[in-house]
Amino acid sequence: MSIRLLSETIINQIAAGEVIERPASVVKELVENAIDAGATRIEIVTAGGGKNLIRVTDNGGGIPADELALAVSRHCTSKLTDDVHDIRALGFRGEALPSIGSVARLSIKSRTADADSGYEVVVRGGHLEGPRPTAINRGTIVEVSDLFYATPARLKFMKTDRAESTAITEVVKRIAISFPQVRFSIAGTDRSPLELPASCNAGETVSEAAMLERISQVLGADFSENALALDSEREGVRLTGFTAIPSFNRANSLHQFAYINGRPVRDKQVFGALRGAYSDVIARDRHPVGVLFLQLDPAYVDVNVHPAKADVRFRDPGLVRGLIVGTIRHALAQSGIRPATSGAEAMLKAFQAQGFETPDRSPSSYTSSPARNWQSATNYRPEPPRQEWSPQTAHPAQRPLHLDNQPAPRYEQAGFGEAMQATISQFTAPSADSRAAEIEAPAELLRAPLGAARAQIHANYIVAQTEDSLVIVDQHAAHERLVYEALKTALEAKPMAAQMLLIPEIVDLPEEDAERVVAHAETLERFGLSVERFGPGAVAVRETPSMLGEMDVQQLIRDLADEIAEHDTANGLKDMLNHVAATMACHGSVRSGRRMKGEEMNALLRQMEATPGSGTCNHGRPTYIELKLSDIERLFGRR
Image 1 (tube, rainbow, N blue to C red):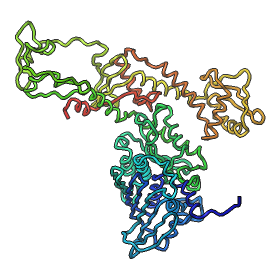
Image 2 (cartoon, helix red, strand yellow; image 1 turned 45 degrees about the vertical axis):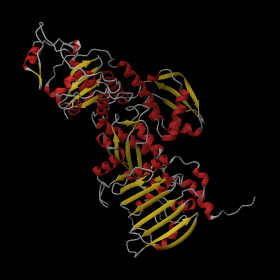
Image 3 (cartoon, one colour; image 1 turned 180 degrees about the vertical axis):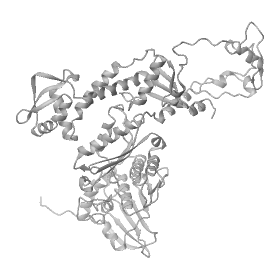
Image 4 (cartoon, rainbow, N blue to C red; image 1 turned 90 degrees about the horizontal axis):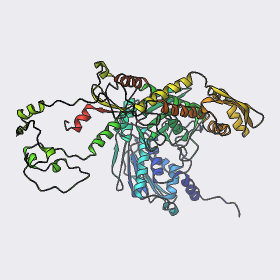
């Protein structure tokens, strides 16, 4: 078979297979072009999940008439100089528009600020028509219809219109977070409208408040109430953004966003570092919520890895990972003890889930069936026939209380009369169990974050009171975190105790893995693991951490070699030791069912306030829940 040159159309269609994966990919490329053009208002309209229509309108600088034909030609761009390592725009390949035009019907209308009129070009199946004059305001309108009509096989791999519309929305949200000075709107016959108004003016420095406002538009107001600000710099790499407290987490990683020099990315190194920062404060099946912005010299990061530009490569990945993990853990340690605001909402819903109706306090309510007033909505039974209520016909449990066979006092229209109040005053409250009675505590404790302990219920939960809230603490989970943090502090304060092997363990490794392990020998020795070279392609292990007891040394070294190869760190051994410490803390902490004195409860609360990360236990569960007085009043209909 002879070698021949492929046609321009086939070349563009091959390139489109890498750049244009689905309608969301088209929207991503067009919106990034609009932002690079200086737009402050971007409107997206879709139909059929983007397969039938995608229209992106912006008020950017526009494209001159004599450059429209170049805009739809491959490898033509205004965003890149002769240095491929100095990439400061979102786009730079010059492949998006010609790739779209090769698999769809594409039209571009544009007008610059100094032009008398706009011009339009049309690309159908890779064939260019125009440019020709058209009516348009300053800016650009790009319309893509019949996506993949030229490559119908690709349509078989598309999802439902709803799924594709959702993917487009997620792409726009991900881009919008990084550009709070731009107003975004999405509409169409296949979706509900979405508006993301600008949170600051174009050209001004984006403040922390403006950025948090835009993030809240995407992630919801709950995020801003549970967010921690990040701002740190190390060796020319700066990290800013926001991350949530550990108790505010999600079941998947869709609420994690990362940006490199303003470019949204889905880089496993960045998200792996985010996950690592929460490794011992969040459950393994839960995911942290965060928005990370990394700023560094473009020469130290390669964004030219994949046509979709979602993956990047760092010149020093260990530096970036260490910066992310260290900054987030420092923010968590400095945040003090904070409960997730979602915990109170969950508690309110748990109370309201019983389905009790609000009783009618009108005079006529006393003639209705008690089952009607207090009927559970989740266990409905037909209402019995109404009958006049009286003390004689009422069930014994519903009859008024009275003493010494005295006549029952009558009800007055506005409530209990004086006679009834006198009757009630004759009762003496039964003495409560001393372990559940209110605990006396100094008034100043009410001003502490966790307040003053008032009672212990079910021999496991401490009920505390602050000036404006009610706090319920899981005593076992809370003490487990305190013991765990104390063990970690002890482990880091001095080198780990090691046990010498009677016969050194020889581990055969590929030469490059052996080099990596030996390069981290000093770090490993701090954790009680002594390794040294033993000829080519092998290392000798002479000591192992005492805490780990008997272990598979061969597998440990191989796992460490794999981790060092991927992340250039040897934190796997530290994580194993922390896991042992967590197990020791679980078995050595206050057990559920233990009765505690008031002094013990208050001491536990004070230690929680002074210990970083005490809002969650070692397994990622919350250690306490706070219910504001205003929420309690809502439960009783006072608000």
